[in-house]
Image 1 (cartoon, rainbow, N blue to C red):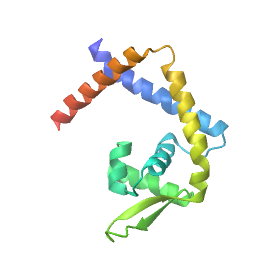
Image 2 (cartoon, one colour; image 1 turned 45 degrees about the vertical axis):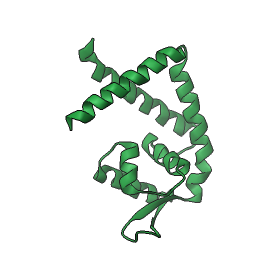
Image 3 (tube, one colour; image 1 turned 120 degrees about the horizontal axis):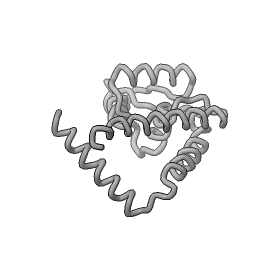
Image 4 (cartoon, helix red, strand yellow; image 1 turned 90 degrees about the vertical axis):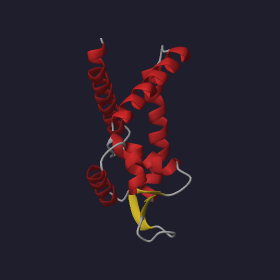
Length: 143
């Protein structure tokens, strides 16, 4: 059973990606799930985020994130503007196009999560979170 855990996580992530992608298309949202996550992350943060900070939120490397942000910029979803406090940094700002999508993305995310977690009791979910956090700590110690 322990040896199947990584595969189960991968399968869960893949299934979630497929479902969110299909739902976005049905809602007329021309975004990948990661682009939706980036939009929500920028929207929900009280302070402007730079690209380096976004890497931590979306768990991908610098070059992958840079490619995703390039695409989002071409689609007029984000802008990279110079940080007022540190001119070496570029902060990520949502365009009006992206801001118009926020409520749809948030609502759909909530629907998918509710569906995914149905029939799972709060105490079961608490154990899952605790266990996953322990696993995350174990892996972080390996770095």
